[in-house]
Amino acid sequence: MNPKDCKYSKGHTWVRVAGGEAIIGITDYAQQQMGSILFVETKEVGSQINQFQPCGTVESDKATSDVMSPISGEVVAVNQEAVDAPELLNQDPYGAGWLLKARPANPKELDDLMTAEQFEAATSQ
Image (cartoon, rainbow, N blue to C red):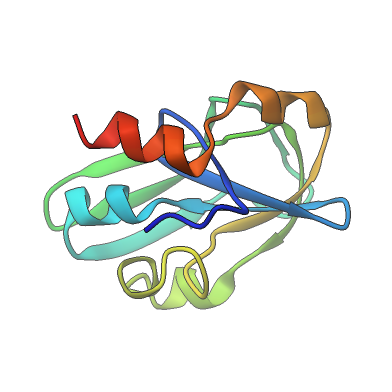
């Protein structure tokens, strides 16, 4: 089940905005499709990210995929625990497996994303 307090992109990323800060990660659907995640790389603190553009890379035993940012903004934190232990993305994609925190540049970009219900409908086809 996808948390209802998140918004979702077609690129299988999620964002949760609270207190002017956005937490970004990959969806449970994405981690299931990828299999065992072996390596994570993200943009560095201070970097700019752009909506629907790569903000990192995730490598699994099946493939290497770009992580497409659901929003634009400035990276303010990287989840070093997930970088050091990529399996967190498989174990807890909406919790301990988050990837980046960013300061959103344009809150209206959230309107371009799906709700949990819309994302579940899109991925169940």
